[in-house]
Length: 259
Image (cartoon, rainbow, N blue to C red):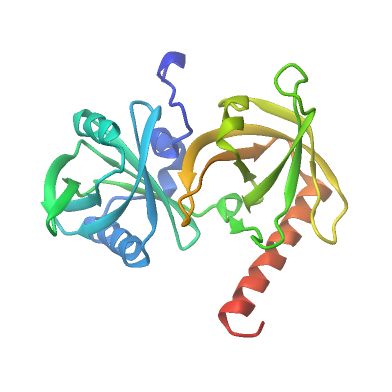
C-alpha cells in the first residue's frame, strides 16, 4: 500500500498477511461470531473512504446469505455509505477485537424502518493477542492521563484526560469535542504522566492511532482518542498489567455478587 493510500485509522484487516493466524474463513464460524455480537448488542463502527468516514451501528440480522445493519443517524453519511465499494466493520466481542469487510451495502426495510444489507463476510479477523485485551477503567472515580501540550496550540500547557480503557498495548482517552482538533493520527506525545492506583507514577510516550466522535447513553458527545505506547517494556509494563488484572478481578467479583 503506497503512502497516499494508507487508511486514516489503523484497520488490521487491511494488513491481512500480517494477521493471517487470526482470520476465520468458514461461513459457519463467521456467522457464529456475528450472531454472538448481535445477541450481546455490540456496537459496530463502520469505516469507509479509507477510514476517513464512519458511522456507529449494530447488527440487526445475520443469516447464511448476509447481514443487516441498523441505519445511521446522519443521512449524509448514510448516502455516502451506500455509494462505498467497500466498508470495514470493527467491534469488540467478549473483549476480543473483531473486524470484517463488506463489499458494499444496499438500502432495505427491516421491521418497517430503513437498514443496510450486505453479503456475509468471506473472512473475519479476531484479534486475541494479549495486548488487545482491554478493560474499562472506573467511571465513578476516573483515572486521568496528563499530556503535555505545545504552548502555541492551547492556553493550557497540559491536558488531564480521563481514561476510557487500558490494555498492555495502549489506552483510550476521553476528549471534549472542542479539544479534538489538538489531536491527529500518528501524532506523538512524549513525557505523558499516567498515575495508577497503588503503583508509582509513570512517564510514557503515546502515539495517536485513531480518533472518532461518539456519544454516551445520555446523548452527550465526545471524542475517543485511541493511543498506543511507544517502547514501553519492563517495569512500567508490569505495573500496567498488574492494574489490568486488578480491574478484571473487581469486574468478576461484581458479576458474581461478591461486592
